[in-house]
Amino acid sequence: MNILVPHARLRTALTAAALPLLLLLLPATISAQTPELVYLSNVTATSRDGAALTTVEEQTAAALDALGEQLGARGLGYENVVAMNVFLRDTRHFAAMNGIYRGYFANDPPTRATVRADLTDRDALIQISAVATPDETTIVSPSGLQSPALPYSWGIRAGDVLFIAGATSRDPETYQPVGGDVQTQTRRVFGNIGMVLEEAGMGYGDLVACKVFLDDVRLWGDMNTAYAEFVTADDPPARAAVRGGLMNPAFLVEIQCVAEQSDERRVVLREGQRRGRSPLSPAIATGERVWLSGMLARGEDARGEARNTLANLGATLEAAGLGFGDVEDVWVYLTDVRDAGAVQEVLADVMPDGAPVPTVAGLPLVGRLGVEIQMTAVQRRAGPANR
Image (cartoon, rainbow, N blue to C red; front, top):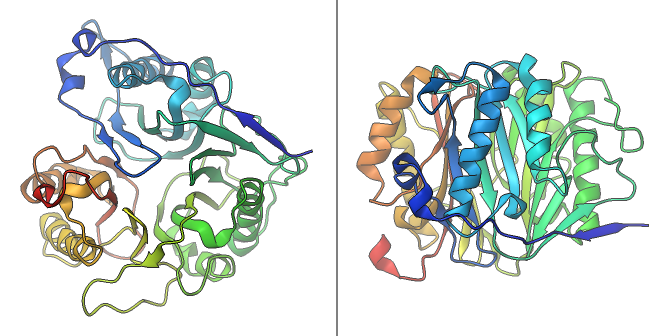
């Protein structure tokens, strides 16, 4: 029997006055289009009460406590989180991280992807980004897909939006790894994603944005070949594909997706742009919300790449009738994490006041460029003054 489990909506009653000043300086971004989505980025914790935290267990607990405080300041709690991205400095910390993480998400945990990445904070062993919603949610548990042994849910639906956990090549009946080359694994990954979509009443044509984490960027071409077999040819989802260290050496690829049902779905191209050969759209609009692909551009250095990439993103937003003031989520992928400061300076120059805090991680790009930026935007109900 297929199972749809209603997700609890209890909220944690914390006040902004109780938060450290640092948390108050890092506002979450809240979407206007239903469902309301709250994005919280780059949560780390390397000290508590003046004492350094040196183990991944200590930092995981402190980072999740900080996340809880940020959620509580917005009238939300852990039960409102629908998607998590966990970045670990060392894959050997995976089991220890999960041991602590489980205590915060014991029941109906959010969807999740966990990869190894270089972190901007040299003392951090773990970095977290999250998506939460105050709206009613439903846990999506396909009966034919073995429940994960790890603390995450396969899918969570909020309104017309479905968050899908980072999927790896696992046998749906046993949860055991399915080996083979990257094409074999990509097909198995999409087979599992398809089961989550079907249980939620959706299909591959509803995918709007995906993140592909490859164990080796040289596998990109072969992955693309299999990937193209599942996404729609005319309006494939927006996408970013980078290198992310996977937690199990048996896996070559992990894919994390979002789907949204919309009668207004369309591909967004900036003026003069044509679709490339890769199976992705520059952006997918679903009414007021726009999901943009990870974009990149040549430049003399990281600052130049970032500035030119932002020009492309800005032109795409303009083609969708939006601007940088409508952006609610930003991801920055860096081949060399030491470029983070320079790229964040460019973001601060280009983005308006109140722009979201970006998720920034050292996740090497496919190709020779070093900066890739991905965004999600939604039409602000306050109107064009935000742009």
